[in-house]
Amino acid sequence: MGETAGTTGNKENERYDVVVVGAGAAGLNTVLVLGRARRRVAVVDAGEPRNAPAAHLHGYLSRDGMPPAALLAVGREEVARYGVDLIAARVEHIEAAEPAEPAEPAEPAESDGPGFVVHLAGGPVLHARRVVVATGLRDGLPELPGLAERWGRDVLHCPYCHAWEVRDRPLGVLGTGPAAVGQALLLRQWSADVVLLAHTLVLTDAERERLAAREVRVVEGRIVRLVSEDGRLRGVELANGQVVPREAVFVFPQPVPRDALLFGLDCAREDSGWVTTDRTGRTSLPGVWAVGNVADPRAQVVTAAGMGAAAAFALDHDLAAEEVERAVERYRASGAALPA
Image (cartoon, one colour):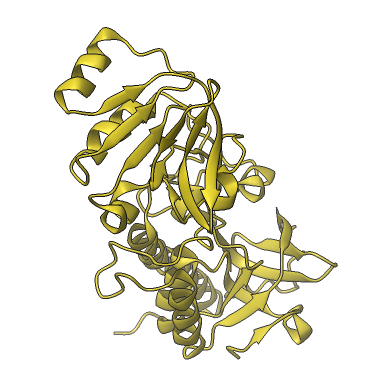
């Protein structure tokens, strides 16, 4: 147990307490806690972390500045100590298992209750009493030439994740959505030279006043492309040919949850379109949890790890309650007298 594998091998016919889809911070912390609770757990991951372009992660106590890939590698080593199966594969879909026909005489199994079949690409399946979806999100970037190539390097999103590294440098904010104004106002605390490139934004008088009071300069004109040279961002080119020199720019991407597995199970959505969960990540469908960025686009790495821990506590209590109920049924069926 605990070995990373490219295929399920003889794991296919094993029944897990929990299968977790996604081995980012949320998924790995879920299986870490469950593994320590002596649960039979597998985590399946396709190897496509959202923060792969970033050189370092920040805001995570004791891990500040650590490369994201290194954090995940350490996490995989840690969970393997507790017998967790790590499976390198893509999950195509998950379905609720058909209830088994009872044996005669009926003897409830320890694993009765919600059950799921997790279908992996290429045909193998895993069986689980509970499932956790921790598949994250993808960043929907504006379609501006030169932007995607610099994403996670000097085209950035979260000030709390990246602004310290570009402090006191000429910064730009791309006006590709209404959140750009707030982003520019916030970034002013990291640099005295912040420019809002209005692009398609139509600013109100109130917004212009706030930007002026904060000493954020507004540059009008549609953005044509981002200009890079020698592997570094040099500036932002406008339709009139002007290039506004900037060493880093911030943009507010559209977060797109990787939630197809959840809605294949018909989990309920919020009005915003995101999956509905309680504080532990429990969805509307019994036996299914969702944690990390697939449920909360604002969750940073440290937040996602905490969400995984909260889900694991709730999952273990849920499984234990089911096991107690089954044990009581067997005890009653045995005709044993209550202890004096």
